Length: 118
Length: 435
Image (tube, rainbow over all chains, first blue to last red; front, top):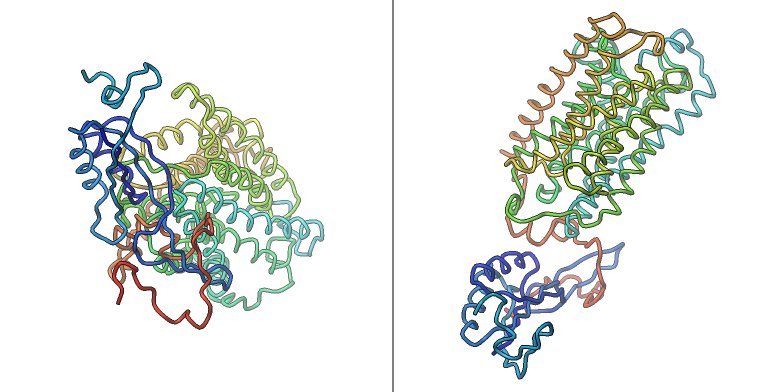
């Protein structure tokens, strides 16, 4: 059981969702984050104040999956998020100690198995 | 435009002038209100660019109007185009404009605000993708090649007006011209890269309602000022500008309720604009009860076009064709049915015994779309052969605000480092690829 964290471009978030859906990965959290991944700084000017904006809007996916689904999830995020330019994002896979489905009290693998899949 | 009450006088009337000064300012505000409306309807990464397309129209169309546009539209009675005697504001002074009781300068300024908002309206068809430079060049050329010509035809003593077509406040030059030009622009510029694939939603519906409401407010100057004074035509148009959009708004909410089971806010803002456009050509020519009927009936086809259009391949993004082109078309035609000489002092429509009026109106409703669509299509094709009208797809992904203006509509300020003048020279270096 792993937690897959994918940090991607906001404009690719829809493509990632689509790819995950096709890979039959269900149960997703997403949040808007700001970060810096080595892309070119944006230079903006407001009434004569020129600023370099070093952080960029990103979307962070968090997906708890059973071990057999890890590769499919990672592949789906890569497929959806890649443009080939600096700043496409990162994926981190981290071990999960426990998981609980609140509604039923199911734990661990059962908790991250989508409803309706035996 | 054919107000008989003021035709014989050629002295300045202070009351008329006072109202026209205020009306001019109201119409100028409409361009900013349109910017709010449009900016709310696009995604947040394109909000500033969308607003700036409207703001830039004030500079570009305003200058072009003073240099040449006004003269071509309002100098003389040539069939197709006016003369050049007023070019560069030559002879436009404190003396009253012929046929009105207001100074020529005020008449010029009032008409300038019409040209400006018409240019701004077209931007709705190309937002979120067209490059800003080509937009500004297009705006300058369109204001002369299309707006000035149609303004001359419709209310500068050109062939349509002389032939008897009634157009109170710009169903021809403003509404049909912008709507059908927007349709052509959407076709030439092409759809946004994600159009029809993912939902491209309004980012701030409060701005949409605020912009729609302020447009209605400004429209009292737009229609109420188009009698060039405080006489009966202006008074009639003013009140009709309250009634007609109210009827459109009501019917629109009912249609929303019927089709979607919910009354939508973005729909309501759209309805307000559609209603104002419907009454624009007809304002000073039809009775208040007929204005209510026009608003109510007109809502239905406009609603249908707005529902149908996103199912097509034409990414006419903010539905200028439906809300302005179709609505202006309907308003122009409606005059031919229900104009009443007892109200307007000019002409009856079909229902009151003068079927010929409907023919005059139908002629304008036929030739204006053809000219506006054709001319805009040719103009943008020519422009597109000289420079790219839109950037690469990655520009659309990043957003027009950052690409074309170097700003964000909603910056957080986090991670923003002030660049001092000394190190402002060095080009930005990607951290991942140090030199």
